[in-house]
Image 1 (cartoon, rainbow, N blue to C red):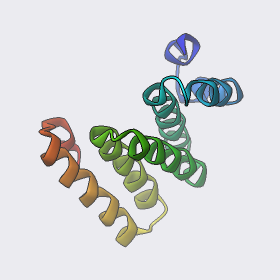
Image 2: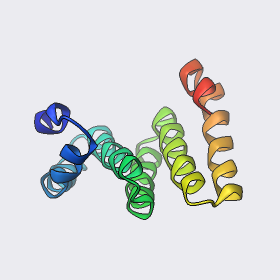
Image 3: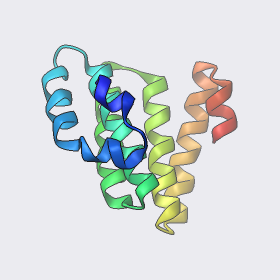
Image 4: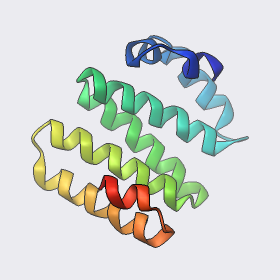
Length: 118
């Protein structure tokens, strides 16, 4: 996890993808929140690199983990990532759906940052 945090840019994070996925797999049963954070970072990296289908894959996995553990703020964040990826692909109706879910959850959990982002 330290290597992910120390990566200079999104390409650095994407380069550590195999190791990160192994770590996320190992952590899923022990610390699912951290496993979700790894998927979120990978999704953000792929969004930034223009690989939106891969970003959707990782943000979807992050969303599934957040739902499993009842992390509403994590769900909101994952919906935000999905919205960005779909917006970038031109899937505007899907993007609006995800951004709306992000906004609703942000209001529910009292996240002004999520409220502003959406």
